Length: 135
Image 1 (cartoon, rainbow, N blue to C red):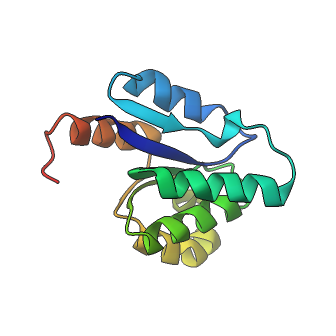
Image 2 (image 1 turned 180 degrees about the vertical axis):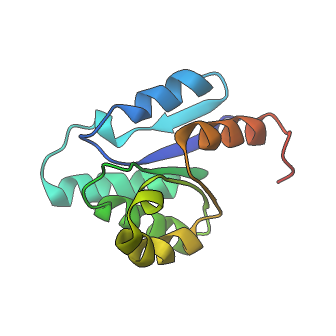
């Protein structure tokens, strides 16, 4: 059975979601990519996104250094935590923004594991799936 991963994070800054999918491949994973639903009404996309958070095994959340707020990511991580989901957080922004880091620390504490760059998060997920890391 394939592991289901929800890709949480910025929507307009880069296409990091596709990078994750390309590097990990579709053979072992099912990805829920909120960039694909193209909903613009906040009620509609919130319901959709939280449905896929609930349907996922792992939340892969990426707080890019240029993300203007991270509000959606914060909601999704909080919801995933309440559901007992595994949360892999990549947090680039806290390294460069002390004020943000202080306020975002509650989100970091909620994550199962935190990395400071995307490649490390992708490698961890790959190793987890390959059984290199004990669950």
